[in-house]
Length: 309
Image (cartoon, rainbow, N blue to C red; front, side, top):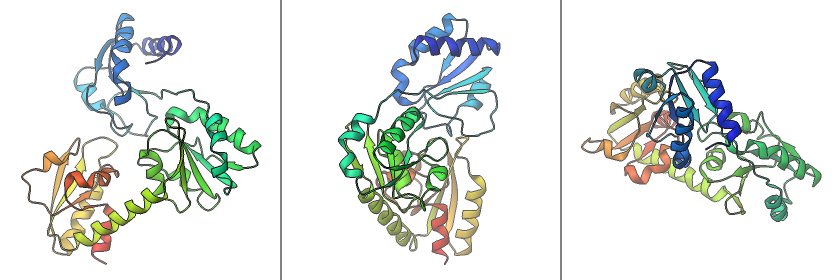
């Protein structure tokens, strides 16, 4: 999971804190390596409990479970601090990956010709690649912007999208479409993705337009729905009960029936047997992408306001 230097650094930090027992939480992509890392820590005198639940981000920490199981600390690997209050100390080990984006940028430079002002963004794993990319693109005559560290989350792009009025496009560097798609549906300028896996540069415009059409269609379908399920997550960074209560009041005001549906991981199977026409997502804002699985319209909280306008 980590090279020898980082493993020793983490072990030393745990010992400095006089930690005896920890819960180790990693994303799915690192689970194949987690046993070796846990064994290393145990050889160093630290008792390790491995969280086997899926981990979707720093919004999904297992601090409550760790405390109940007698741990002194939660070691959360792969994500940066989400700013949550926690039941016990948490070490956020970001897990950076060294990757030189220059060969891929050089290969796709022609597609960037019409964009002079470019905002760069990536996930925490590839943050070190941004400075390399900025230097290369600047040498090629581009004006390059990085907001803050340049990091975006699947659900949070506030810092990066502040550049919307300044740049000609956004360029996401990394892997997977989850994060650039999250940005593309929130900004006006084009979002390009340079995949570190395929080496291809693609425009997220088509996907973002389809997403917006689906969202508009869900709002229209919801106007004829009567029974609404308000999804509430118990994950620390997704628990939005006040928003859910506000939504229920709004639905009540237009004569719709609604129920709070509380769960940790929201899946279609947990809704079987419930007579619902429509769902309102007060948990992870990316649930709507799985609307085909739920087989019902899914609204964001702000969409509900359009039902009563």
